[in-house]
Image: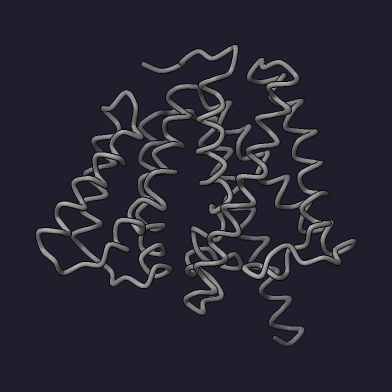
Length: 264
């Protein structure tokens, strides 16, 4: 990539990042369950398209319809994640009956669907504040690890993602845990130790999500999961860490001493 193309790509990256930030701020400000449910649902379908590619599956109209029905049912389910589990069981039966699809379609379905349903569960159970907390922890870890790795990075973190370094991981984790702990105390009224532990586990879970998606891309010889977000790649390139972090946060918040539901 020459200097001009590199500059244009960075410009696209920043513009797309600003647009995503504006959309996120608007969603938080409006804080409407129907709007958030619809936005997450549309994003899920885009992520599903990329998930099929990453797992070497053909695009399936049936799977898109099936996932849409699961998402609709989740709105009326007090525990939306149950919809993903039931959906996976039903999908397994359909695949076995038709004998025309690989079991990889089940993973392609679950990879984005379960975390997106978890995001919606976090919103329903703990409010928009928990979503903000999650996004800030992941964004801080990712950004601090990127810049810290560029300055101090020497030791590769994993063959799945050779550009990431252990030094960058440590720096990213440090900043996300410090700020995340303060936010947990301030906006979710958690104790310091609980906020610290949740921030740490969520940050590290986000790293695992990033490595998992990187592994799938290298396995299929892909640079990006898609091209939906100019300068960033695909939906999963941008949301991989958030998806894994969401599962960790939802699990830990349920065991928080100050747990209380905020919806239904």
